[in-house]
Amino acid sequence: MISLLLTGGILLTFLLFLRLLSITPSINPTPPPRRPPSQQNPPHILYNLGSGGHTAELLSLLTSTSTPTHTHLHTRTKRTYTISRGDALSAKKAFLFECSAGSPSSSYEILEIPRARGIGQTWLSTPLSAISCLAGCVRVFVKVGLPDVVVCNGPGSAVLVAGVCFLAKFLGLCKTRIIYVESFARVRSLSLSGKLLYAFADRFVVQWPGLVEKYPRAEFHGILI
Amino acid sequence: MGTESTISDPPSKTVLVTTGATSPFPSLISAALSAPFLATLLSLGYTTLRIQYGDCHELFQTLSPAALPSCGSIDLGGFDFTDDLRTEISHAELVISHAGSGSILDALRFQKRLVVVVNDALMDNHQKELAEELGGAGYLVEGFVENLHEAVIKAETFEFKHFPASGSEKFCSILDEEVGLNLD
Image (spheres, rainbow over the protein chains, first blue to last red):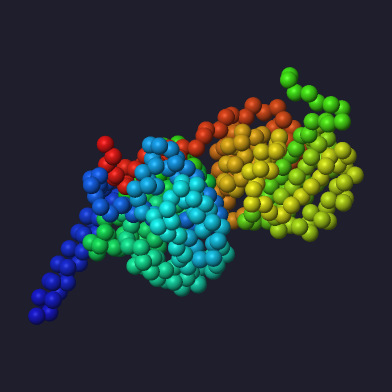
């Protein structure tokens, strides 16, 4: 009986391990989906805004969505912006960005999640706030649904937002594509968020060529912001 | 050539010093109000000095009266924070900035003469790497609080390399691939 359970346990672990391998982009990269024009539901993009510099960089990456080649990224998608709790400036910037694109307010949402880690916060209390941030992420996904694409850069919340999406992918709930863009400020080393998400992002983009030598999965296409 | 300037309206030449919004940078403020720095500005014909001092309001208030005699004809002004640093940058001939990527990028996009001073008081200083890399590429001049005036003299004649425009177009193509909206 015990040996049967043991065998079952080992088998299950093995299968879960295989599942993990099959969805981890660094081990088994998969091509992006092709959505037919007739698809009813618009694809859902989640932009994770940090505060200050991270928000500015992410919105700067998106300036070309206003050009004719890329306007469908506004007009034919549903968008969610996640901001850190109390970061009114990032909320305002996201709102103004959508206004300047002329989007109807029904096509996007700006939602708060608790901070993953405050500046200067001790590492001891970090797990607690990380759990509260995690719960906040789950609440966001319950409200707006799991995204088809996540775009994030360096802030701590990126790890949790992308991490929850990856877990949902593991459970077969979604096929979210994760795009990580390392900050322009990172010349020779990745940020902690970058290091943690390196294996799990479908696209890992850096803005300095030296990083590609150290991190072969990274893509470099010049300075993008 | 075509511009007409009268004697009553001398051309202004502004230098903007910015310490950023996140961390105080008192040594840069002290350097920007030091006698050798101000003497250099005067000799190079600068007429206005604007200092964004952030949380260091008291330091600025303490040092600026002492600096006034050295200022000569230079119009000295300061402010703590602004929503619109880009406008301040656009009015300046020379920008002296902390090494924050946002301020650096703003100054470079306006194609301004740029001196960047790394704040050595910051831990895990990847800002230093950014300043060195951009300095090595000829986009900016690295300065140090101990002898800021030397960097200003260098910047006056330095041939700054033209900084590329935004690569957002490329990023949107990546995003397009991943969203997978088939438009053809």
